[in-house]
Image (cartoon, rainbow, N blue to C red):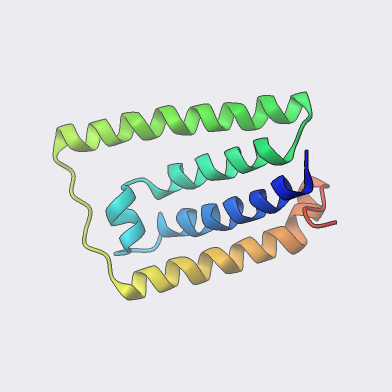
Length: 124
């Protein structure tokens, strides 16, 4: 894949880490607006990796994660509407915490853990 797609993947995974952090941080606007930020983050993570990799085993793995996250996101949003689920209003503190934790986790994973645990250097 072209180098630009690897850069796009870095951006998608950065946003994905912020969204995944938002799933655990209370009272943030990400959760209020999206409802299921972990699934949204999983979709971005999988999509970015599909763009950046070209091997069949990568397409199967990340394609399966993407399909799973899309289906579960749609089902979860429908269930929320049917059951009248309202997420608490967000706060600036919740947003800042989500972004800070997400960026920190992304940096640790991208620059250290990915190579050690997965065996692939994202920027190397």
